Amino acid sequence: QVQLVESGGGLVQTGGSLRLSCAASGFTFSTYTMGWFRQRPGKEREFVAGINWSGGNTHYSDSVRGRFFISRDNAKNTAYLQMSSLKPEDTAVYYCVAGPSGSDWDTWGQGTQVTVSS
Image 1 (tube, rainbow, N blue to C red):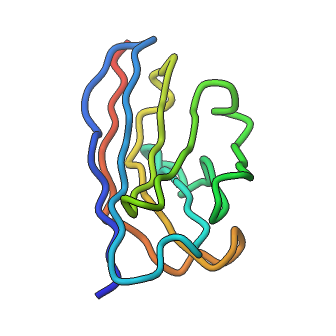
Image 2 (image 1 turned 90 degrees about the vertical axis):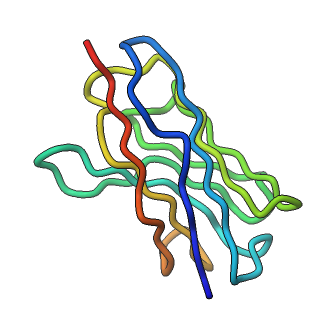
């Protein structure tokens, strides 16, 4: 069974940090591109960050570049999103995604809530 399970969300103050984790199972993790999307209240789901199979290539949305850092550990079948300098506008449900490429996300996690208080 293909599955992505996010953890690490919660409530944090403005300027704080959180690290999200995404545990993958049911597919060959080391061959898949991994990413994070988010859905802010009243907004459409949007791309946040992506990382290729080896971890050697990453992409970020303009809104998080320089504050968020995506990484992966292929030995642990886990992807991470380190979020720093958090802002209230980062409040969202964050989803872990996987796909054979960065333009083909075929597996989604259930999401984890991140709330940044002002």
